[in-house]
Length: 124
Ligand code: HEM
Image (cartoon, rainbow, N blue to C red; front, top):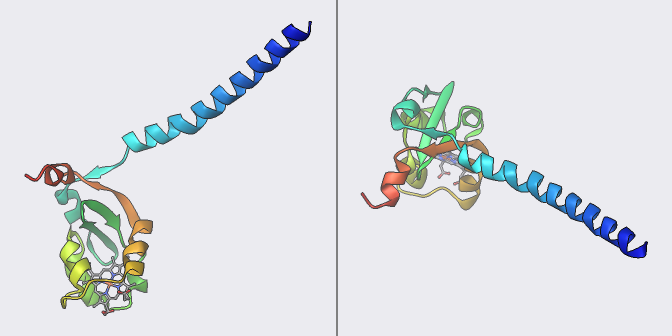
């Protein structure tokens, strides 16, 4: 009787652990597979202050909500909306990189990856 109870106990908790692991891992894998990918042509459609996307180091960002909070005037940013803007981010337009804090803020606005990022990683 004790043996049966112990086997039932082990079986029950094994099922619980299996279910928890499945619920935790499956959505993570699914999300990773479904990461949105954008082409530069798609990014280029968002080239206004009211709708501003940028591609920076192979990632795509929707910075529309951030721009009103940016310390420099909109005229500085606008030319980079809808474009590959790594140079803008690393030079601020006058040769000085943004602070690590500024780079950190970017993450909040990330919406996906640039389709051509896969090509650049192969060095082609
Ligand atoms: C890509 C085009 C961009 C250009 C040309 C640009 C340019 C500038 C300029 C001229 C300044 C003020 C002068 C200075 O602090 O040296 C500045 C400051 C700043 N920018 Fe930008 N910016 C751009 C994008 C961004 C983005 C996407 C973010 C964050 C999401 C950002 C965050 C900041 C912050 C936090 C500062 C204060 C100084 C610092 O932390 O480096 N900027 N930027």
